[in-house]
Image (cartoon, rainbow, N blue to C red; front, top):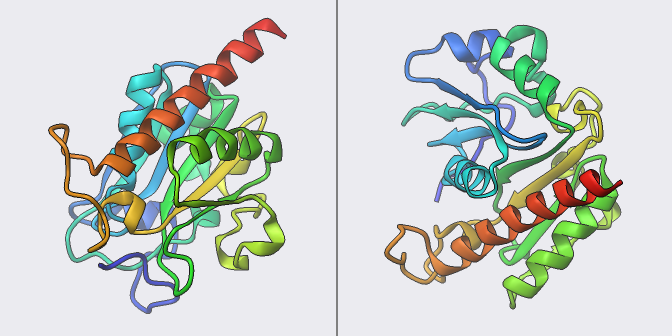
Length: 216
């Protein structure tokens, strides 16, 4: 299991450089005012782009993703994804009100912990409540003090915090993404059952958020 590598030399210094690299693909789909992101997708943080894109399509939500090709393991920090360096990212952030940014991580002692960082703490609590019911055996960590500093997603330049209502940086361990020896085998849709439960929960929260905003 390989996930993003921090502080490795030779990587892109900004989003412009990243998007210019061979094999890097940028996606944007503008639908509702709720958005999902996966800015370290593809071969870097495995399955994060599939989770975000599938949840977005299921909920009729918007999606922005960057897919890293096989072999490109130089991590560009989230705070360096600046909207003025990408028309696609700028259009996404201009369109959505709230965002869930899907990331992958792996740390000893946290193999069943989903970390809910980012600036919108109300949305974090909504996600935690929905996902707790769908993912028994997994812990939802919403207290920022309990999340490693590098994974909190609270930098104001992080695109998850740029949307009008901000958002949640959801850090997923390998097991819930289907990339652990302890992950159940994929179902007919290609997702491990916990991954499918996660996607369904994300889509439900997106729909409920939109319903709540419409009623306000």
